[in-house]
Amino acid sequence: MFCPGYEPGREVSRSGSCKRCTFKETGCYEAISERSRQKVQEQNRAYRRLLKEERFEEAEELFESLRPLEQKQLANFKKEQDTFVRIDWYGNVLYPHEILLKNIRLLEDAIEDLEKAEVSKALGRLYQVDNNAYAFMFDEDVYNHFTDYVFHQPRERLKWGYGRIMEHEKLYTLVISLLEKEKTAGSDFESEILRLKKVCEKQYTLLEKYTDKITEVLKETYLN
Image 1 (cartoon, one colour):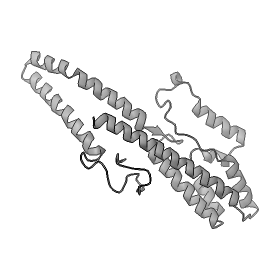
Image 2 (cartoon, one colour; image 1 turned 180 degrees about the horizontal axis):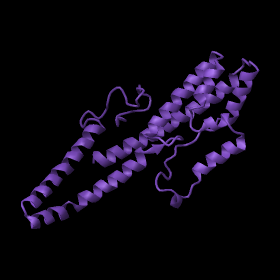
Image 3 (cartoon, helix red, strand yellow; image 1 turned 90 degrees about the vertical axis):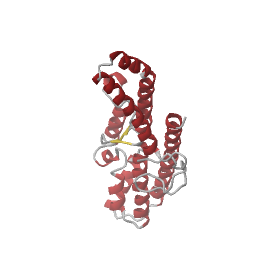
Image 4 (cartoon, helix red, strand yellow; image 1 turned 90 degrees about the horizontal axis):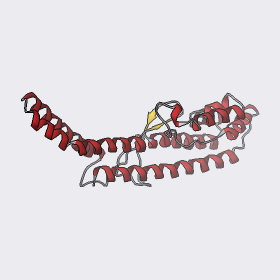
C-alpha cells in the first residue's frame, strides 16, 4: 500500500512505501480508511437492527439522515478511483506509483547493463517498459499505430478505464539501435545510456507528480 507520508527524496522500498511515515498524529492511509469504514459499518448495523425490531419510522429517519454521508462516500470513491487507479500496457490494474517504480527499476538496471556492455540483458529489461515490446516485433508505423490506438479511444466506446493509461515512454529508436549493436557486437553504448538516463529522470518527475497528487487527495478526503 502506498504511504501518504512519502516525500520525494525519501528512501522508498520496492513495494512503493516509505521507510517511515510523517503522518504520526493520524497513522497511515490504512488506519484512516479503516476508521471511515468502521463508521459506515456501525451505521449500517444500527439500520439493520431497527428494521429487525420493526422500528420502521426510525429506520427511515436514520436512512435519510445518512444520505449526505452516502453521497460523500460515493464522491470519495470516485476521487480515489480517479487518483489511485491506473492500467499498465498489459491490462493490469495498479497504483500509478507501482507502474513508475517498476519502470525506474528496469531503466536503471538497463543502464547498469549497458555500462557493463551486457546489451542482451538491457534489451530484456527495456522489453518490459510500457509497450516497448512492440519495438522488438514490428516496424515503427505499426508500433505507433498500436500506441495511438490505445491513447485515442473515445470515452463512449469504453466500458471502463478511460484516461487510466499512464504516460508512455517511446523507446523504439533506442531499442532498434541496441538490437543492431547486439548483432554487430558493438561496444559503444554512450548515446543509449544518456538517453535512458533522461527517460529515467522523467519517470522520477512523474513519480513526484503522482505522489503529490495522492498525498493531496488523501489529506482532502480523510484528514479534513
